[in-house]
Length: 300
Image 1 (tube, rainbow, N blue to C red):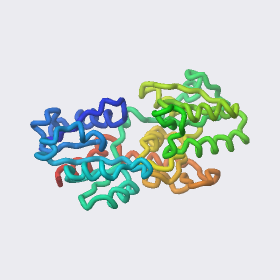
Image 2: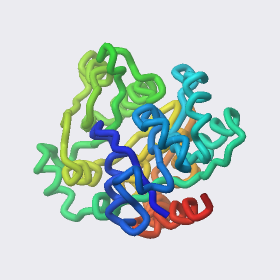
Image 3: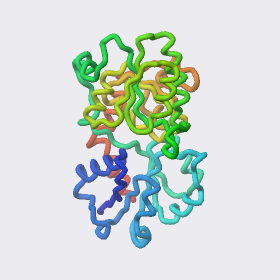
Image 4: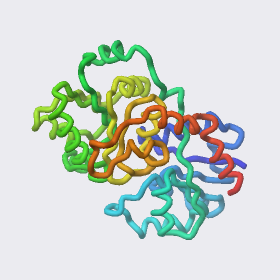
């Protein structure tokens, strides 16, 4: 059996998953689609880039990370569904969404975690200083894009940047030493809100993965405020790096975090549980985290 994964070329996490899969499973993978038995489409919009001849003649697996109802195109899904033999999702919540759309088989496995990228570090005071922060600052992190790319000002509502800002505002009333740590693209919405309200922040637009792991390690709190998620992968990265995290009950959150770390509207009662999260995520460390995928392809 040989698996072929189309390349997205968007500097997105899926390209990294693709590279990690090929590196760790060379005997059951190929970069030549002609030699493939299975085509694994890691993101649904990629299917149109695969010639239909191969979609018709190979087994096709498609991964759905999440579905945003307001942006979902049912006609596109039905066109894709015509070629897909099996679906893969990364959380039970997404599985429920996809189940309403198709009768085809759905495998539910979170993606693996590369613990060579995401891990706890010592000398946190020294790390803080290297990024220009002081020991006494209270650092809240958010590394996910929050702004729509079409105008670079409208909030990406599924990511909940309005909810995030509301939480930050409340914490800022109690902690005058608060600073928000941001990274990633399309952060214009939250930056504008922080500026308007004179809340301190520091923005590192694009960093390498080693630096992002260091940023995780200097945080006092990471907040996932999304309305809809597949992961997000930040939950797994925080868990692996032992970063304190609270999250709305979205995506994979309830499958990794302690229930006391989850919130709906009232974040004030949510509390990080670092060891619980770490013990959950270590089951997904490479290579063990790939075992369920290997079994999935064996079944297919």
